[in-house]
Image (cartoon, rainbow, N blue to C red; front, side):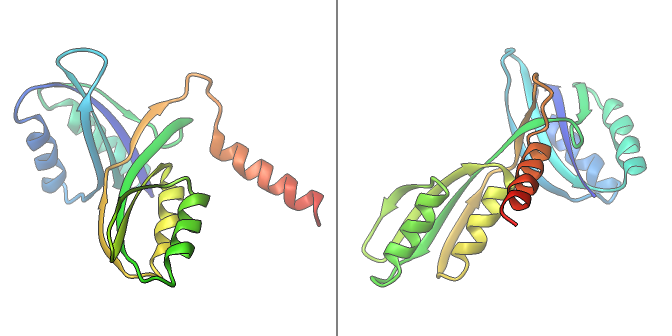
Length: 178
């Protein structure tokens, strides 16, 4: 199972290296990684996605707390969160495909950030499911390059699980129209 960990650290050199070293020694691959400053000077937030069972992730969290400069580690996998990623996709364009690609971009509220005679670059921001969906649709065209950030996340103070709401709304709509 994929887990999302939110780690607050003191913003000092070597912190990320120690964390990645710990993961490497334990045989874990980090699927997604994003690092950035927080609202407090000198503190950074590291958001990472890793695969493992609950017991293994608990052990990994205990090991993270043993590292210096680690202030807090939270497994936010099952906590209502706002999750976002950013992806830039450069697509080779031929005249016949441009309108189809722009239609897809419009549906996903993507921005065209570069346009040339033979390509266009789209910027898409959203939850990981949205990013996956547009990438799947654009795969039928000639994708030249992809650059993708790691997932960032903040817990929802409202404690509302929007994923659960999406599933409930989807079920209710299918029930109404069947």
